[in-house]
Amino acid sequence: MQYGFEQMKHSVLEWYYDRFDVAQDKFNAVLTKNESDIILIDLSFKNCLAQIVVSDPFYAPYKYVSFETMTLDSTESQRTGYPELVYFFYDSDEFEEGEVIEELNIGFDFSLNYVPDELRRMYVSKKGTIDIRNKRLTREIHPDDFKKLPGVSLDGEFLCTDTQFQYLSVKNHSYSMRITPKIFNIVQ
Image 1 (tube, rainbow, N blue to C red):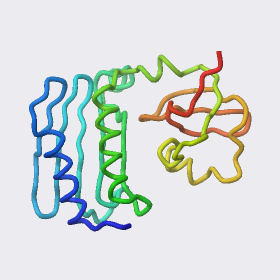
Image 2 (image 1 turned 180 degrees about the vertical axis):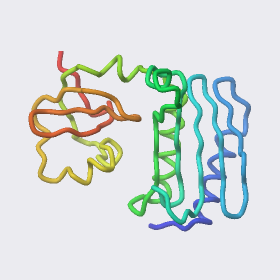
Image 3 (image 1 turned 90 degrees about the vertical axis):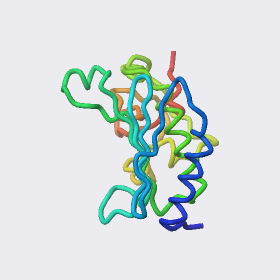
Image 4 (image 1 turned 120 degrees about the vertical axis):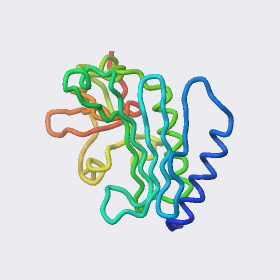
């Protein structure tokens, strides 16, 4: 069931007030802007900052909702001198309203538990297999790579070569893609 801009604004505000009504020690959440055409929610965590935007953009990589998390504490950020985007979610026509709210929860949990360079330390240069059984692949595979997936075999071992946002960059002899750690099983 599709949702409109006003409906999504209402749902995100409801999510915000339900989740952040009580002061917390591990994060700070502030409704920075609540106007007719935009909602901005700024979140600060121990190791990163995040922002949720609800708007009806003329041009953007999302339909109405954007969730982005950045850090200044990663090796990459310190090397370049710029914040590193470590998590993103953008809604699209393929999402239902409840799924967008679920994605906000996933993004919040990722940001709350984010440790700089942890994915790199745990996965880069490791071999593993991809397990897609009982998983919602649109959540587990980068949106651009998901579009290329039909006809690609995910059998065999892949090597994790890097991380990009919340994804692992993995490759085998014929294909490379970005997946979440949830579906990458390291081979010992």
